[in-house]
Image (cartoon, rainbow, N blue to C red; front, top):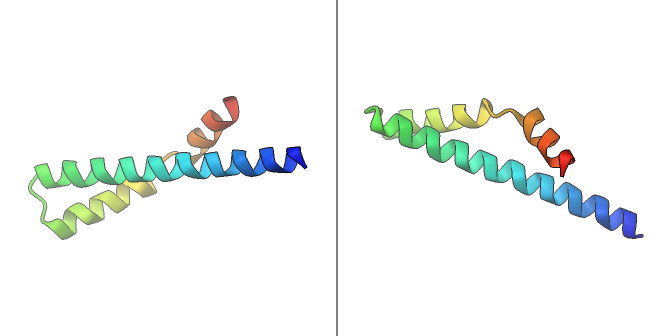
Length: 66
């Protein structure tokens, strides 16, 4: 039972790391695009693009090292 709980906690921690990375990427992408003079729609597209470019494999590997 404890092993199942540990696995669930680990999966939840990984999901939280991915969510945090997505939010950070979106904020940075939006801010960079806005500062470059893009309109709001263009900045939103840049934010989405930043999320799509995230290195998910890197996040997973970092998670498993801990």
